[in-house]
Image (cartoon, rainbow, N blue to C red):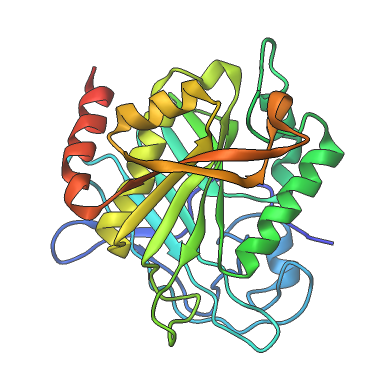
Length: 297
């Protein structure tokens, strides 16, 4: 059974580096395990820094991530990295913060708010897995969190920032995380990642939320991790998603036939053909400029 704290706030104490950028400062004796945040909630004092979500002990290392603002002074990143143990592959846990949205580590205590977002009036998820009740949502979250523990998935809960209000409106992830060096560990930066498993509440669609979320994730992938490739994919029949990916500037690479199980209201029940897209480092600056221009409108 997973035990989780109850806030969705950012992690760490902000301080300034010599270059003036903000940097997260963390007490190395109070580092969180995957899914926990400093000052996060009532369970922190009970479990302590060396307990996994399933209650077993795990070693921890000092935080290796950073927190900083972009040129507009708006965005910051918080990173926690638990160490590798013989019984647990670590997950890198990030909080990515912008003006309109904050991407926080996915947790089981987000289930009710995610269900509320998924079941807003007129919501339709034709090609995407979006559970509509608490039991199904909890099962789906556990599935993602298990992969996070293996180091192959970094799932986020999407929190909309509206003035002083904070409201959970969906989820997104880094997935298909690849490290090409045979000696690499799950704490090393990846060489290739996918941005996907994204869904939003009906009220958050066609807003700045998705645009800024993509900007935050792509910026982290290219500018922090230094990846060689970001992959995006969708059901080949999902014309709306394909158009959005192409507007982003990603390059279409082709369609993989019967590549994976179909999902969503129209896709479940048969293998799907998957449209593949990618972004390379040399293409990233133009895409970044395009996303930033959209946010300024």
